[in-house]
Length: 328
Image 1 (spheres, helix red, strand yellow):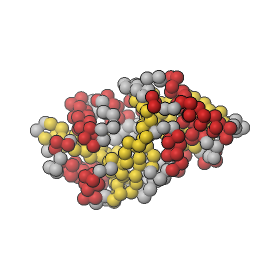
Image 2 (tube, one colour):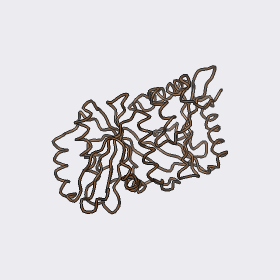
Image 3 (cartoon, one colour):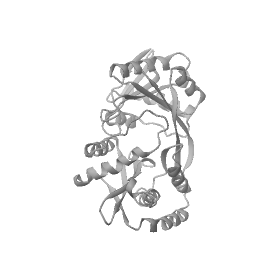
Image 4 (cartoon, helix red, strand yellow):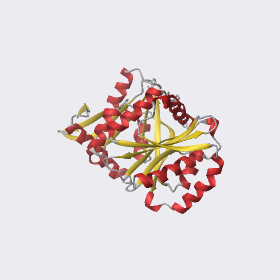
């Protein structure tokens, strides 16, 4: 078996990566949207905030049989590497996954990473592979999808009207496009509130956000062809930014949306801002992106507050995803 590092400009390698990814999704998580070649190339050029993962493709006789990812941050969590290994359903039980994992683990060791994580949709085979290679379950997230055609808009309007008086001291502001320079630091503080989300037993330090990282995220989304809509709450009395929600719309397939961050600064919690921000986002997207069909989101299984919000918003469960970690 040949294992090659993926160059996002190598169309054959990207195509092989996409072939394996989509075969795995259709076999084990048919609710997931297919990956496109443009999406994959953008992922490995830009990542989430200009720290792209490194992709790998494993081939046998020139045919792609497995794919992998190696992701680290150089801003924080310098001890940690996240790995992904997926084997084409037609080529399993032949050692391809173990060989690819060994390559990723060796890279993590060579870069001085001391904890590695890996995760998949919940399945006995995935759990067996992880535990067989020394990983322990640490965290569970639940994937949910909002089907916009199924929403009860009248009920959502009633929820908005009920919540709005609790946040009478806040303006809800819509923004499409880059954050003004003078607001970047405040946006970083507001985004950092996501660190309060529960992480189970994962060995993860708080992520570090600053103006540069906020701008890097915006640059990466533009490069990947994702249009991020932001709705944030501003306190009228102080001008402080109190909370934000972001939904990215895929410009290649504008019927697909994905929930990015939703966070409320601790000092401004208790005013139903999380719910209001997401309701205001739905109103805006209904006007600006009428073709949008679905929005996907992820929450820690124990994050009861945000799960309650998402259930009000009509999200339905797709499946559970399990994260595993081990020491090197």
